[in-house]
Length: 357
Image 1 (cartoon, rainbow, N blue to C red):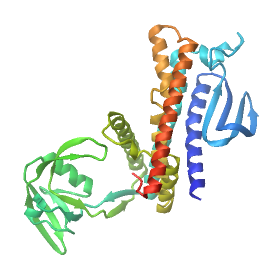
Image 2: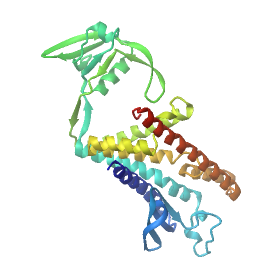
Image 3: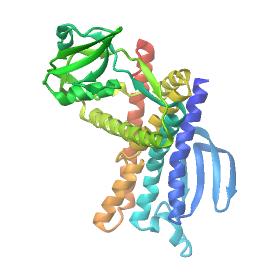
Image 4: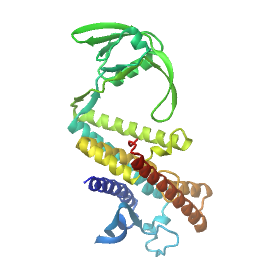
């Protein structure tokens, strides 16, 4: 069942990606010859208008075939105005960016519906543990304390608590905590600690040495707030994805954290067991990852095409076919190398029985 869920989700995300290219092409009045979900031999197909819609044998992929994609393709004089290669650069740019853009927009819609139907999860500002020899331990904070205010400002979530501590720096804080039936005021002075974030960046932050209890409360919100939260979640997820990829390239994070097809199946299984909200959140995360990765400046990806358009714009003429072929071969080689890395990571995790990142 886990493999089925993975195929369904990846198939949906690829459909959304290719649909973005398709719609942008139609808006730019470029003829679409084929819309395929999957690669390889055609299983079934039907032609509507000038476009053939195809389901191919291998579902982990897809493509949109446009009229005149290559300068080597013969296009009659009567059809040149609808051929991709003969369009101005700005139109070609829109068609190529359409795929990644729709992946991000799809994720935003998913997040909005999750917040609207399932509510907004909020981590309560309850202390789950006190680190030894920390400011919190010295001040007398205890496991199970619920922080309800800092400097008389109400605190409703663990995120609010963390942000308030961060803004105060090393200035003393007066925490109002609920301990059983008692309300106590405890003064604690943060200290600056150097730490490494989950994204691999080294930062210095004020800390008091408390760990969240991890208790979650669901807040049901109205449609407007659901839209705002969905947009916010999409922005934060996109930002985290970009920072993670940047730190991987800079060597701040290990490539061993990357998951391949096997890892994606395992993660999908975990999220499916957690419920539909978790599964669709994971699908939104994958959609954003698919969109961002496709913007990498590799010739076989959307980002590579955008780079070639930029070079063409600067040179005021297209690159030669020989140059394009060389760059495409280099791009394919890099993608194969990356695929081997993630497959190796998957196999190594299985053999060593290590948890997924």
